[in-house]
Length: 239
Image 1 (spheres, rainbow, N blue to C red):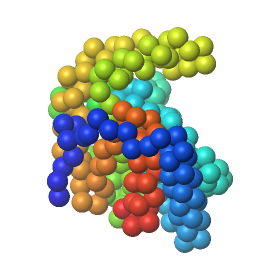
Image 2: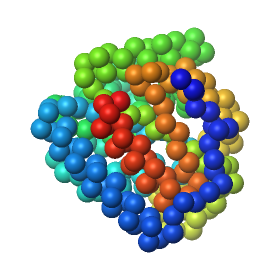
Image 3: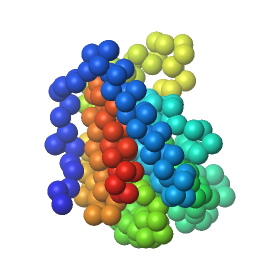
C-alpha cells in the first residue's frame, strides 16, 4: 500500500470549465444523497475528516459535500483550539461526544490531527507527546472502524504561491476578510516545518483500514468535485 506524499500531488492541471464543473458536481452530489440514504436505512455511521493547508479550500469542499444531502443526517464540526477545560484532559477527549449516531455522518473541519500538525510545529506538544500520538490516533481510528464506523480522511494541498494569492484576495474582500487572521500568516512562515509534519503524518497514519486521500486544492472546482467523489466511493465501499 503506497503512502501518499505531498511531492506526489499534481498541482498543475484544472480538469473543468464552468459547465463541466456544474455537471460533475451535480452528479456526485446526487450520488452522495443516495449513499446517505443507504447509511440511514442500514443505520451505518461515517466520519469524514478534512485536513489541509490554510486557504486550501476545505470549507468550499465541505459546503458542496453537504449542500444536497439531508441536513438532519449530517453534522459539521469546525475544530479550533481546545478550551481551558479540554486542555487539562487527553487531547482525544473532546472528540468522543462528536462521534456520529447510527444512520448519520459527521464531518470534521480539522480534527485530532492537530496534535501532530499545529501542536507539533508550534511546540504546543512536546516531541514524545506528538510522536506517541501517531500510535494513539491509529488505535482510536481502528477502534471506531472495528465498531462499524467508516472513516474517510482527506488532505487538501496547494502551492505556497497559490496560498499567498488567496490570502491577499481574502484581505481585499469585505465578505471574506474574516477568514484571514494573524495565525494564517504565522503558519505560512513555517511552511517547511509543516511540509515535514504533514508527510510524517501521512506516513505514520495511512493505514489499510483508514487510508489518507490527498487532493489538489490548486483549482477550487477540482478540489470540490474530487473530494466529493473520493468520499462517495469510500462510503460506498465502506472504507
